[in-house]
Length: 226
Image (spheres, rainbow, N blue to C red):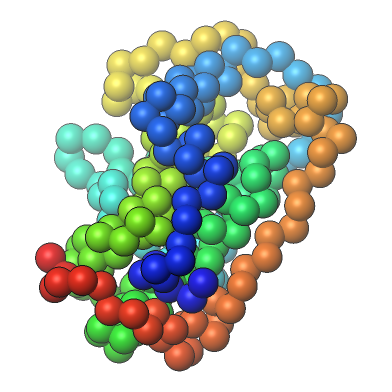
């Protein structure tokens, strides 16, 4: 698969479970419930280098999906990219999901390089909007954006120890009272003995550099970009 518009794409089982409405709501509830988890062992929060791919494009996408505003925090203030970085690097999630998230960067940049001769992060706000609307017309693109949105909401609701929601700004905005005690670094749910034995697999970011260079999204989406 080399673009969001591959006709042979089928939604992986791991994403079917994550993106169903019930599981989407459970995911947000779980992020909030993590505030009450007790725990053990040590690992520090890792910070994404947003000047490098795939984090550059993922960060630009998250910040477009939830921009900063006077009415509430955006992805930037919520540090959503650092939450997502820790998800991919440390969480015991399905390897296929990790690869889908990171490979989507190459597919998105392949599309924008073909349409605008620029990677996504360098586009104007209006061109970013039209690009995301265009890829959302494909099943893979819709799934990719929905997956990022689900992690964006988790970043808003999870304790700061997971990389996002610094100083609980997401809770403050939503007037949410978190549980107690809050988990700290080294005391997160995936650091429980049951999870500690399952080391996170290394991510395989396939062909991102090639996609960026060649614009591999060869299939044009149906209709015009909105």
